[in-house]
Image (tube, rainbow, N blue to C red; front, top):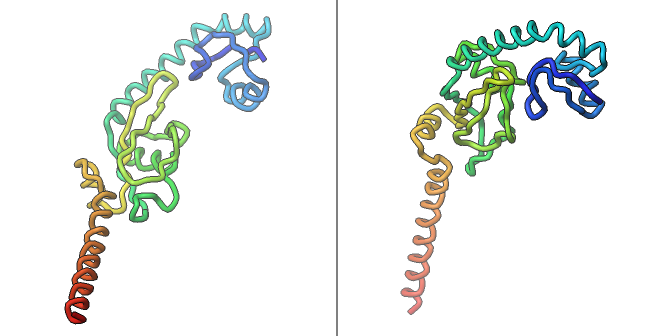
Length: 192
């Protein structure tokens, strides 16, 4: 299905481009969201007549998004979640969780659809997440997922908290192994 784009769509094209897409994508996303028009001769004439206005509106939205981007740029948000000793979360961090916390921290209204996760966050640590405020404006924020506020501070300083937990678990095991070896030596000495 051929469409005329009314705004820039990532990985598809810019304003005024005539693109060919699958009918389902057009019917279910591009047309209902008013991101495109069907590429008929009449719609092409209507688009050319309104092109200046459409581009001016897009410029205003881009400027507003750029202003919001300055408030979001470089922010770091902390999310406290339950996790096992290996650092894997009991669940995952969703784009909605990040949007809510980022909105509170930055003072900018962020929708969950603006938070772009490459893959679900299912482990403790620092994660870089892209926030698309406009089709042409995006910023990266750091999401610090930790079990407690103290742990979040350590992670922010670059400490791997999951390694520390493993080392703490290994230490008692080593002590127990040494105690068992000592006990076996004592048993052997008494038998002889």
